[in-house]
Image (cartoon, rainbow over all chains, first blue to last red; front, side, top):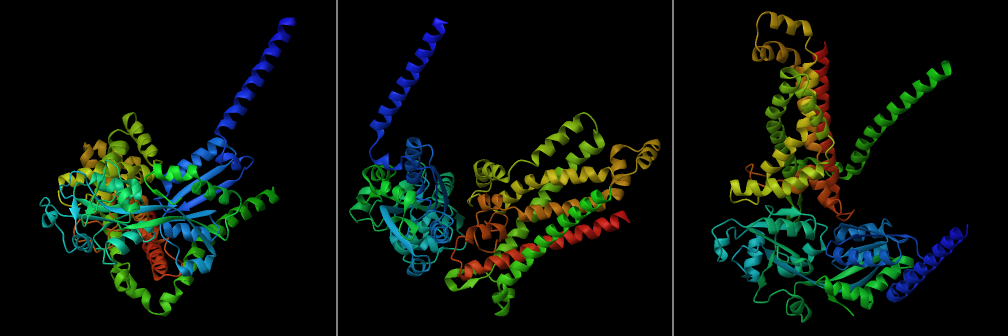
Length: 282
Length: 283
């Protein structure tokens, strides 16, 4: 009997000790994540695919801090993000472009810009062509130049990859790098920054474009008119094919959505943006 | 007892009415939403025009061509495979080995199409690219091959099913006359089973036409009229998936209903054809 009592006491001590450890660790982790304590809702996010790495990292931190919160992240492209948040299907709609005046008026959108991102033309790392002029790039995408030989590469056809109509990455690349020129009908169309990277890194004769945050060993970024796209050159304004990354809400953000956006703008969120290859705004 | 009979009868009737109602309702919904295009006489133009939003052309002609090319190629690739497997399972080895193979085929029907698409992107596309150097590897051929694989279980099971329609006494008679397996297949099985086999073909064609993910992932999605099997092409279903996120008020979005109606008409036509053949096959 006595032994039993002792055992029970031991168990209680153990539980208390564990509780103490949990309290102190959560105190240590506290800070910016504190505001998420006590929340237990679902936060739905969709839209721009360039945003996804940062969204995922932020969501992971928040959900580790408070497992009651559920953050669901989907792609779809900037157009989808704006449309879905406008119709109340999601709480936050991401876009890699500013919402147009009609969209803002129609849905009463509030835009928050939390990072700046460059869009770079990319090729397969095996491709010897490492730099192009704007004019060459426009001619390649419009289908005027069809062989890599014409721009100093191998005698092989150029496979152009582009994005679907809802893509904000496509929008900024088309406006700022292609100067609103045509994109050939023969271009392969892919549906996200990730799919573009997969396509280009698997195809030795490809050319496409991705958000600078997505560039790694799988693809090589082309120097455009002598400027290499990188975080430094985007930040200094030297590399001009860049855009803001926006998170939009219908009306003023409130509740969990507001806390999430504030977190993105805070030191933690901005550090995440930097870590994922974007330029923080604060 | 009467109450039970009445209840079950009305439940079955309800289920029938509901499913028919939904099918017809969808058609009606698409027709109503596409009405502005009909009214302005744009509908028929859109069926054949090229897709070039920059120049104000929103035709789905390339997508209809792409759909037909990819689905036909899939059926052409799938026929010999399916026929071979079906013969093995249904005629040559009806027990033992055949039964094992048949359960493998049945398991294949439940593999999600995204898996096929994924395998296609990482294995088939690079292979096609290296074999036929030049293109990106994302083309009608790759998509057709992958879709052929996707629809073959449907086709195999249909073929096996139709082989069972052959009366056993005819087969016994052929055996008694000393016919070998090949002769039995050509002179007894085919004449009895071909109508129901064609039904299977048409339904598999419909399945190939209706699949979205494989086409979206490995056909390249270029909105131009394809000129060879190594050209990329966009199917109607992939086009819908690519455009759905566009602005509701844009013409791009309205073309979705043209796509929807043409898909509906094409698959509907196939089903009617399969039905007609099935009826005659039974008579």
